[in-house]
Amino acid sequence: EDQVTQSPEALRLQEGESSSLNCSYTVSGLRGLFWYRQDPGKGPEFLFTLYSAGEEKEKERLKATLTKKESFLHITAPKPEDSATYLCAVLSSNTGKLIFGQGTTLQVKP
Amino acid sequence: DTEVTQTPKHLVMGMTNKKSLKCEQHMGHRAMYWYKQKAKKPPELMFVYSYEKLSINESVPSRFSPECPNSSLLNLHLHALQPEDSALYLCASSQVGSGYGYTFGSGTRLTVV
Image 1 (spheres, each protein chain N blue to C red):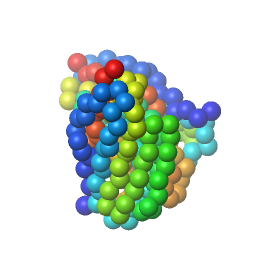
Image 2: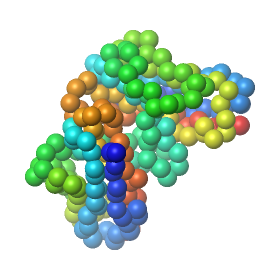
Image 3: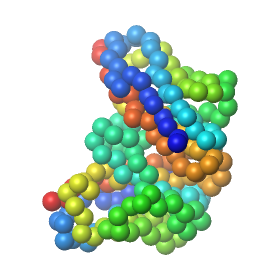
């Protein structure tokens, strides 16, 4: 069964304190792994797509990496505006479904 | 236009009402999706449309009825809902095929009273 597990559930950082979010996955044929940001009461906002092990993508303070079993979202020198829930999702080639992890809620304090 | 637009943003309905949620995109995407999201939970897939045809129904109760009248529009018709159906309903779209990211709308916050 396809499964996505994110850790930690919640993360509190001081402004400027770098850290990483983890996404472990089990999927029957990976079409893509996606990172989304979601603010309260809003829809998920697309950040990155990763397709194969070893791939990396960067956008401002965020960097996503992928191995055969997990993905990391590295946040460098975060700012309070980076506070949000970060969702990881995998697209299965067998089922054609996008399956989400439970998310990591990040709070960055000034 | 790179957006998925959902209306209304908020909806309060009684258990005997009939209402509809609307979703529109003009990105030329031929796959459209409905997701349901409860508070502090991830989005859960409800329906998938591919080329305006229903391709996946995740065993959703019949009180939820999807419709895709054309390649730009997706509706979700609601009838005889229960209070536990209160949630954020998200529409998304993507290109059909391998590995394309989904673009999500801002959602409709539904409250059933």
